[in-house]
Image (tube, rainbow over the protein chains, first blue to last red):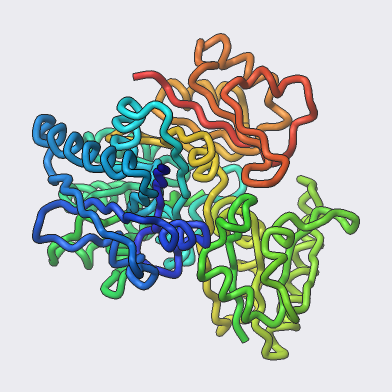
Length: 232
Length: 232
């Protein structure tokens, strides 16, 4: 029995690592998180062409901050996983981006290690979304002695403002809900032209722009990442 | 004529992306930075098994902060590159980690774009060293709403201390010269047990440890990365 946490990158199947491809091809079961029963797994669509006889097991992680609903979902996923592993199966749990950077895999790993203490686990790193955004926009994430801060969830606009004041390069993730307020803040700080936004990076319908105001009219996707580079 | 900036990850050839492998296999010329004539290129050793008939062109980027010596090196590299491209060649410039995160490729890209304004460039993202360190140590880089700061060069210990005070997770890169002072600081801040260090991550002689003091006795490698996770 062995569990792999496999990062599949943010979208383009060509951003899979060689290791991820081998692990997926040799797994008995591919486990993938979905937000509800009707939703497709984006992670699964990225690895689709390497799936042959592997069993696909979807686990539902509801998009909620309700700790009880989340707890129930994690327990169910953990129990399913434990059963597969105790049957001697090799399971590849696939996640968007990297498995240990803001990913569902982190919770599952904690939880299954408590239940099966002698379990062999291997983590396969993946390309984070902001690394891919930088490649698509062809704008450096950071260079020389510049520092970099990554904020995954907007706790407050004040926190964002302070981060911008203190750092050379700022990555904001999952900003769909706060997008209009962030654009307004950047406008006030005269930083709109130092800003790149990527939505569904690497997917066929991806949008990469350095005109953040253009995205104000449409519905923003959950998978929206912003890179702010202060002038030096 | 086309220029690819290709990230090959920090060490393990299996961390190459599918895209990186395709680009390397189809390039006419592989360009690789080395620090002096006698040194091996680590990036080249990572892609070695995909090299067949591609021409290898090593360019010397001396390990110096002398701006004039660096300027001369970059100009020479840029001129060689321009000549290959004007001959209609496809050139893959390979770099450790990611090409747009603290990499030599950033300077070369700026410089060649000034000279050949209609040049087609594509950037292939790579796994950054700290993402691989986290995978090897099996310790999350960041989770939930935690933030993350990346400091590539230690400008002052004070800056490191402030970064630790302000953030949940801290990545310090290229810390070999400052290592004893950083370990002392972490000891004072009672954070030594929240700290993981990786050296030559993914290579055969790599060291991953959460006992930072163990590394104080030997000679530290230039490729040393530290991950600090504050208790919450």
